[in-house]
Each structure stands twice: as C-alpha cells, then as structure tokens.
Length: 260
Length: 343
Image 1 (spheres, each protein chain N blue to C red):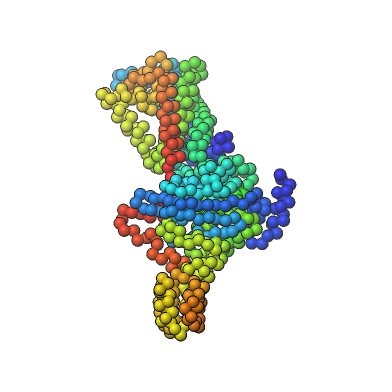
Image 2: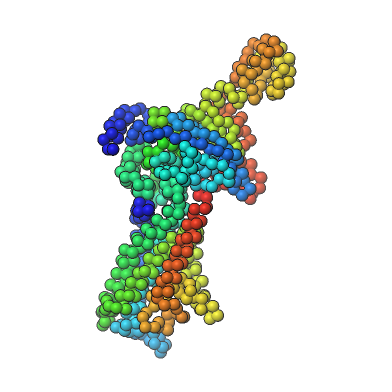
C-alpha cells in the first residue's frame, strides 16, 4: 500500500494541476481575509455588520477563511481520481494493480496526506494577510486558544474536502461532470436549501452545514453565519462520513465496473 | 543479483534486431489460455464462446476485421472487462489473481498518458506502484529508443512516440508475456521494421509469449508464427502461418485439372465437397485440401493432370475467412460499435 500511495504522489506532483489549484487557493484565502479585515467594524445600513478588529469573534472569523477555499481542494481530489478516466491511464493503473480497491484507497490516503502541507500553505497565507492587515488597522490577532482551534479546524475542512473529491471522482468518473456537479451542489443546491424556511433545518446535515459547524466561531455564531448548526465535532464527523461514503461507493463501483 | 544480470546483459546486447531487454528472458515460460470467453454490450454480442491458446517462444497474431472483438477479448484477458462466461488464464491463473502481474504480463492496449506528464515520469509512476526501482523507467526508454524524449511532456509526442512509450510501459516488469493491441498503429515504416525485429527477438531468443493483434494480416505476416483469426466475436481459424498458407486445413482453394472433369466433379460433390467449373476445364474446390481431392480421385480411378493449392496470397485467405464479418453494417442508428467507440 505504501508504494501505491507513493505512486499517487508521483502522479500528483508530476503534473501542474496542484500548482494552479494551490495558487488559486492562496489568492482566494488572501482575498477573503483582506475583505473581511477591510470591512471589520463597519456598519451596514445602521445594522451592526462585522465585529471590529481586535474582537475575538472577528479574529476567529478571520482565521477560518482558509476553509472558504475548500472547493479548490474538492476539485483537486476530483481531478486526481477522474484524470485516470479522462486520460485513460485507468488502464495501466488497473493493470499494475488489478485489485482495484487498493488503487482507490491509496488515492484517498495519498490525497489526505498531500492535502496537509497544501492546507498549511493556504492557512499561512490567510493568517499572514489578517495579521498584517489587522495589525495595520490597530490589533493583530493573537495565536492562542480559540483562534488556533478555528484555524486548525479550517485546515481539517480542506483535507476532508480533498478526500470527498476523490470519492466523488471515483463515483462519477467524468471530470467535467463531477466538477460542475459539485459546484452546482455547493453554491446552488445548498444555498437554496439553507434559504427556504421549511427545509432549512436540513442544511445542518449537509456537507456545507457540516463545514459551517466545524468552522463556527466559539461562543456562538454571529447572526449572519446561517441557521442552526451541529457542534464542531459532530460537523467534522459528518463531513468525514460524507467523504468516506462517497469513497466507499466509488470503490465498489470501480471494482465492479468495466474499464473500457 | 546485480552481477549476473549485468553479465547477461553484455552477452545479449550483441544481438541484432531487437535491443537487449535487460536479461535473457523470463524465469519460466508462461502459456496463455482463453477458454469459452463470451461478452455482450447491450444488444451487441462482442465475443462468443472464444477459445484459443498462446504458446511461449512464439509470436501469435490475433487477427480479425475491425469490430471482430479483438480488443474486447484482450481486455477480458487482462481483467479489465468482466466476461459474461469463460476464463482467460496465464499458466492457469487469471490476471487479477496473479501475485505479481507486472512481472508476468506486459500490455499495450492504448496509448494512454497524462499529456502534462513527461514520458519518464509516466513510467516512474508505474515503477513505484509495482515496486520496481525507478531506474527501470530509464532502461526501458533506452530499449524503445525514446531516451532523448523521456523528459519531455508526453502531450507533445508523435503517434509513433506514444506507441513506443506504451511499449516501454509494458516492458517495465520484464514480463514473460506481452500482449499488444494494434501496436503498429502510428509507427512509420522504420518503426514497424524495428517493432517486428523486437517482437521476434523477445519471443524467439528470450522465450517470451507474445500476442499481437492487428486488423491487417500484411502488417504482422512477417512477424508472427501462429495466427488466431476471429470474426464477429467467434474463432475463425487457429494455427501456424504455414498451415494457413498451405491450405492444409481447408482454408484455401484447390485447383484440379482432369480429362474426366465432369465425373470428378460428380465424385467430389457426392462426397459433400463444393466444386465450381473454371475456364479451360479446370475445377476449383473450396473447403477441402489437395490431399483429400487426390485421394478421392485415386479411389475413383480418375486421371489427374494438375492438382494444386491456389493459396499463394495469404491476404486472400484472410479476406475469405473474415468476409462479411465486419460489424460496420450497423442496422440501426442506436446500435454502436462499442469496441471502436471505446478506443
């Protein structure tokens, strides 16, 4: 299994996909962090908006922005799996490892582990942006207690999303279809569910709801962060459950389906 | 381990046509056995009750028109497609159950690479996955003549270079069996010449089992020792190329000339043999052999002036054998030729 995981790393790091996605995630994280800091403490139409710099809630929100790049980690996982079908390398891959479930498991492990350093980079970019910008505005956030915990959880979200991506890829096989489907789901379906009163209760059980639970600020969510949520650890488990479920289905199908 | 390998390599590198593969051949020869394979895709019967064997130390041509089920058969042989019925084994073991598949079987099924990855890195991936030293990637690149292009992205390779890279991938594990699906596609004449020598060298001098598919007999005629001909998913003929050429198995046309041609035709027709009269009093006979025609004429006391097998053109025999078995005559727009679209 170790050699299969290493083979997956070789595949991942010998094309340029990861560089593009990592760069995109860094830009996104820096952008979100800067926006959040810029509007901290502003009021909107007389209503209280974002808490001001220096406020513990602001600091936790700012440290959680890395999780907003989760979609790129999802795409990384999806591409990692679906490129085997898109470029037909599934044939040599499954010829080398005829017990196909081992390929899928190796990919899950390889992407989970590879996502860790990538997530650390994105987190570093987010934290750096907030620290410099908020520092310039008067109060750099501290690296303590709740702040660090939220930061760690946002990284965990990224890693789990990479795993979910591999699972979705194994399930759907079509690269464009899987990516478009995932984006539509995350940005359309979940938003609709969350905004319709009668069914918004279901949102907390969905992957997006789990992410929000995982990255919710300690000591209560500020009003704009959405409807009611699970606790952080429940959200984390639920999210991981989604990832493993997709991976399990994908593995079963990969073993049974013909490779043409 | 290292020293005997090196010693062997120096002796083999004096070989002529095929380049040395790294040692004198597989530890022990492996026989391929296909038994009663059957597979359908929807309404299309791709392969029906197909059985044949591939022997070590020889190159076997797997021939048939496009859509005859060749690729489907090879993919079942390699565990990529699940057959409806039947088995395909390597010395009795199905591909998926081989303890070390890469070291037993090497396959070229299609030229499949990530366009953004270099040929060398592509090979290294499979070295890692199979537990081979990554240096094997460089060795096989040299063998197939791609050493200079190894570090370039595979997306920029020509069709011929892609075929060579696919072949390099099949050689990584120094396997006892090589399975190649249309390997000459995209090779220039020089490349085809090289491939012929290479395959013969692998089989004849190194005792490997080589199965190579093609839809053109002429492409493999000079390379193969044995042929397995399929049409419409069924076995049409299996045997050596000499058997096919001589018409000894009834594949060809027998020409016979006799002063008593009318009586001879009657005798043969009574024996259930199809006879047609040719110009100049000769008879042409299909589905029989010169030996059988001669025996029946002798038994009937008929004088013969000429008796020969008119099968000099192998290509002609091949056309006869596979006539009307192309699957291009798709009856309805809904039914597609799965094997072809899958490529």
